[in-house]
Amino acid sequence: MVRKIITYPNKRLFLKSKIVENFDEELHTLLDDMYETMITNNGVGLAAIQVDIPLRIFLVNLLDEESKEQKKEDLLEIINPQIIPLDEEKIICTEGCLSVPDFFEEVERLEHILLKYQDRFGAFKELEAKGFLAVAIQHENDHLNGHLFIEKISFLKRQKFDKEFKKQKKLKKLNEKT
Image (tube, rainbow, N blue to C red; front, top):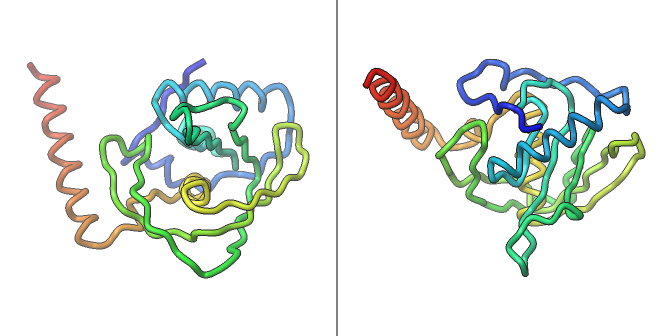
């Protein structure tokens, strides 16, 4: 089932998510729904808080380099993540977010990380990630701590975002009246 994605400035996006303790059928349904929601909305990642569930869960499913498609077998279901930097090197990537529609901006992140997490059955896993995969993991993990990527952009770029956001909101209201 495709769930509704909550969008900025919804205050629930700024909640700190809780640790998952039950690896049951309800969790599996949530993970399956999150996958459908992410794919339907053309996302490469989705945190549970984005569908208004404050649990430490996120998905990442990058495009396959060759086919330029998302393959379900490449899907990462990340539960109760811990990120450990593997070096100080940084990378700058253009990021967007399903909860901040139609806005993209460059963000600096760690280039190389170790991710410790649990899978849908509660098994402990580790994954070493570099480049865009590391960026996507950090972006989604920020959601679990109540942060959005727009908080990582410069003051001037944030002002530009706020101006564009208010303009879009005004246009939306005008269109609703007509």
